[in-house]
Length: 190
Length: 190
Image 1: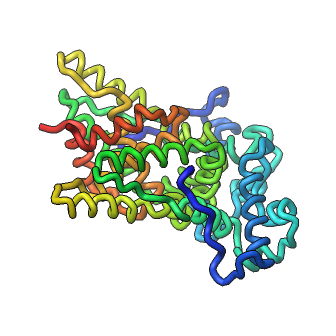
Image 2: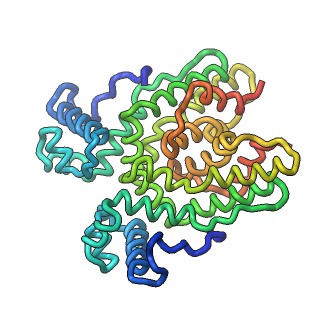
């Protein structure tokens, strides 16, 4: 997403140190393998070979493919997304939905989401939705502080977030800007 | 789902024949392996061993784990779902949404959906949504034939189907009957 900053260094690693370099190489290997045409099974030895590190290093650090994918998805979907603050809930939600649609349209995103859901159970699925709830909550609280009523976080999730993820993951329909905006207008009619 | 009839026999197989027995054993093996506690990697040799058939038989018939899961998901989500016909679009949609929620709440369903999405790409994802579009279309056309305006298939998908799948696949929140009904009331206000 255009508004995502560089991911923060892994907890406990010295930035720029060997640990951070290994993490970056392994994350890059996962992303490459997921978007490869060849439908190779994603296993730890395959990831390690592509990253140029020992498989034991990857096993020791991540334990399983599921945990590795959860880590990649977490840093992909949580780090540094800027929540819009335009002074209007409608405009905040329109920008947020548009950024999310762009992110889900990114050719790297869908294979990562699908593989993480498929391999890492509840934890992986939750990593793919990142900090959506907290971010929506922040936009709603600002609107409430401006003295306006708002829908609940659940309602915004059902009306805006769910259709974006559903269309991206389960259908071959495009997430067009017009359609994305229409989700917000159905939630907040004039 | 309570309204699902027995799956139709695989195209080209004689019902009750060897081919049908193998298919049933392999489908059952996939379902068992997906709900096993042990997080064993789902591979064709593992499925074949559990089904008690030769791995070459499975390879010859399905080709890959992705194609096998797509076949299981297709027969799970397409066969014999009864589309309600109550004479009212609201009640049809409430029943349909409630049946879909029950189906997605079934402990067998979520592991199958996740594994199929994770392994079988676009084809697998589309198998998991089965005939939803055609079924919604059928309910809408009946309402139109009764002389009433209706939302579009896209709108019903965004407002009712997407939140059900999103909540089931991406969150740990329950698909309660009250919440499921509320999706239809938001789509069709009084």
